[in-house]
Image (cartoon, rainbow, N blue to C red; front, side, top):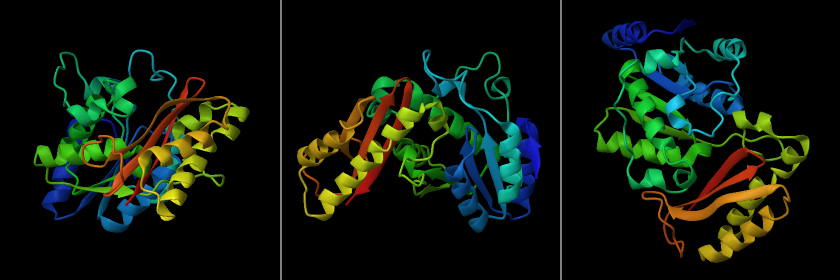
Length: 280
C-alpha cells in the first residue's frame, strides 16, 4: 500500500491502471475509519483490481459554526486499517492541494440539496458534490462505494452522476451498527456517556417505522408520530428533522405507495447524528 498526497501523482497512477485494463474502486472518506468504512473497502476489494481510499476532511462541506477544526483525525490508525483491509492506495491530499488559491468552481446540487440536512446545512451538499466530482476526475474509478447512513448524500450523488453523464457506477452499502443499534459514525466519539446511551433511541425509532410498515401501516403521519414517541424517550435529544420522503426528489410523502426514505437528524448537545431506513 502507498499513500499519495499529490493530485498529479494520483492522476498518473490512475491513468496507468486504466491503460493496463485494471478496474478501480474508490471509497471516499473523511478518515477516522470505523467498521462502516471498512465494509465499503471490503466491497470494493471484492469487485475491483485496484482499491483507492481517499482520506480528506473537506472544508467546503462544513458551515462556519460546524466542527471542521475538531473533526476527529488519526492518519496513523487509518493507514494501518487500510493496509489490513487490502487497500492499494490512500489518496490523502491537503486542503491547499484540493482548493488552491483562486479556486472558484463548485457543483450546485439543486433543490434536493436544500431539503432534509440541507435546511440547516445549506452549503453542505455543494461541498460534497464538488469534492466527490474532483475525486472522480482525479482517480477515475469504475466503481465508488457509499454508506446508506448518508442516504441523502448518496441520492444527491446519484443524481449528479446522471445529470453530468459520468461514467461511474455508484454502490450503496448497508448501515453498519454498534451492538445496541447506533449507526457507526466518526462523530459518535463526541457523545458523553449519557448521550451515547440515549442515542440508541434513533435506532428504536427506525425499528418502529419498519415494524409498522410490515404490519401494513401506510400513513406517514402515523409512522412519524410513533417514531417521535420513541425519540421523546431521549431527554437529551433535540430533533432537527424527522421526515418520510420520496427517494428521487426528497419531497414529503403522505401515503406510502412507493419506495420512500424515512430519515432523521437529531442533536445531542452540539453533536448531530443521522439515521434512516428505506421502506417499500
